[in-house]
Amino acid sequence: MKAQNTGLWSILMGLLITLTLTTALKYLNKVNEIEYKQWDISTCTPADYTIKMKISEAMYKTYKD
Image (cartoon, rainbow, N blue to C red; front, side):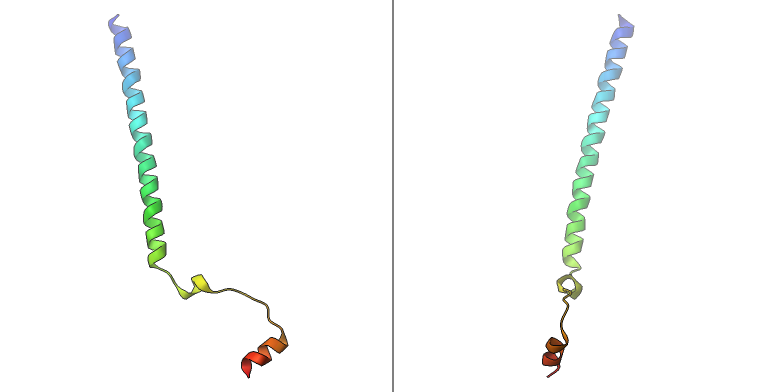
């Protein structure tokens, strides 16, 4: 009987530790995602708003004039 109780408590503690660790890792992952987004927003550069577009010779000549 004592061995069964010990085994049961061992399994319950293992489940508790697993759930705690899983929750902590999910929390840290979300915190890192938020921190990355904050860093990305704070390091906005002009290249973030640049687009590529093919232009014809006529368009380029009009631009130069």
